[in-house]
Length: 566
Image 1 (tube, helix red, strand yellow):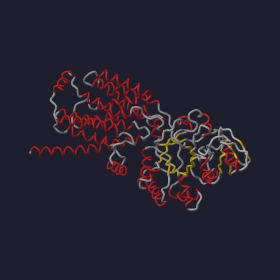
Image 2: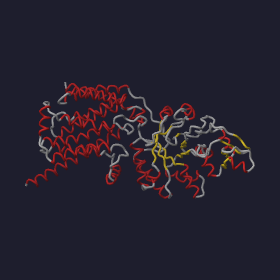
Image 3: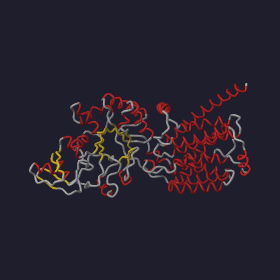
């Protein structure tokens, strides 16, 4: 039966691999647009006595090919001198019949004319003055439209950043999204029109919208049919703590390994630092084979061959049921119900991530063949997970994978469960009567501590990452596709566990910890927004580096044992 189930897994791999072709075609890196924030650059331009477009042209030879215009507020126009703003009481004192408690503005005619139609508020005209019953200084007030037009005519990739406001008018006749815009990146924490006017907002947005890394924006899904572009930026306060070269490396990493197409830039206080940032960024993109240009939304139609992966997943689940020493069938059924009940449409992908990291631990402990078997099953599971879980929404990052923590928690626990004998009652009785030693307690606590660390350190913004490790990560990223340290750690433990004469309980403890690294392989592939080749080489580099370190560890332990016993 086991041989037949393994054959089913092998047969299911071919159509599952073919099902990944549309995704591979869609997620080729580049082109990316290097988009400079207009308002951030404006301060530099003013300091040099230039207008915005002149300052922007200075960075064009360094690769900047786009500009983003955040929507202005009324108070921004007031600060610039394009508008005057007065309270009604002040105008009454000047002899005008203004309403007390109202707020009035006047200024450039084109802007006042737009603002008169911009809000769903009562309004009145007092000659040149336009009045509102609310203080509108913090209300959205469009863009410097002449600059937007000139930037587009100069060939820049123009991005606009409209602000959602419950009292703004969503009228196609208003330049909420100017016709010169090639993409929209919503400002703030929600999409334009959220929550009740998304249909009105969709009528205004006829270009792709940006999915901003680390900034969930409710309502963004409504604009999916316009196309999605992944955008990466650095919070400016954090950017200022980084050297220009360090900041540039983060942008390169985002474009190369996370599929970002809009790189949103802000200048440093010193122009020389901004030039260093752009020079390093251009070098890194060129070295990574990522072109600078006009990005296009990445879309693909999932292949129907993906459903063949279900055969492989069920075959793996059956192998798990047969391989566990006790209640294998019940455990398999509970896993199936957990995956389908918790992850819904992603249940097949989650089930693959829970089952396949365990299968390599269920066979004989025949040295490094066990490591190869565990790696092979994990990679097969990664193929099934990717085939079932890869949809345009998951690859773009609109729909995150459900069960990320479970992929790191459940497989190691199942591996520990597999260590029970078939006569589990006798085993549990022996464990209960076993005299505890401080060494055993220390190793058990270490195992639990490492499991907790693995869970807490998942994600790009994980806590508990020491500064030395961050520097090591940066170094490895310059040399290769950086492997995940959990995987390096797990692979290194296989030689230590299998090639040295440990007591059974010590070997079990080491294999339990190694299971964390194998589970991390499936966790790596569950980050669907990361291109598949990047995930594959991350896993491959982790396996090779881990095996090398494990081999060195075996030599070191053998020499220490010889010294201690000699």
